[in-house]
Image (cartoon, rainbow, N blue to C red; front, side, top):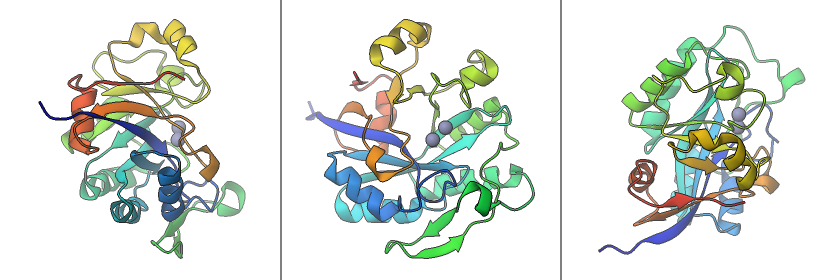
Length: 248
Ligand SMILES: [Zn+2]
Ligand SMILES: [Zn+2]
């Protein structure tokens, strides 16, 4: 019987590429903060882009932290969905699909904030002008199916929130949309989540920080009992083959 260990995972962290995030939440500082806070696995999940994931994964590898490349994709119904991958190339393939459906035009950084692509030394490589802030053209079912075809996990973001969640936008989880899990935001307690969303316990639940600044990293995390802090082991947990849970 292989040895299982408890790993703390914060699977929803924005970088300075998200216009609504602070500009100092760079991949390097995210990894530093995650290590300092005792996290073992994180996912870097910017709105509709994976451009900062490669550098984050590289820095994580150097520091012994599992960093998963991810995106928080806005469906055409304006619901947020976390797409979490094991490999940067898969995240970038998903990004290509997303970019094809983004609205035309330029991001207004004066009004909405900068979208910074950075390197491992926190140097700015590009002020990205794509329109990450709005919805993609991907309906939720197509999005989830695309994520699965690339081997990723699809988790409905912050379903307790009254905006930009699958429940706020659609009112229910369509039976033909096969999410791997549901996320509860840092705003809801376990007790309240159980009381309000108990009908959805057939899917695994995670909770994450949804950090847009360095302080919030790790304010919420999900515990996983795994053989190793790898994406493959996480997938087993989402399938019910490993223990996972949280109680905040
Ligand atoms: Zn969101
Ligand atoms: Zn988010």
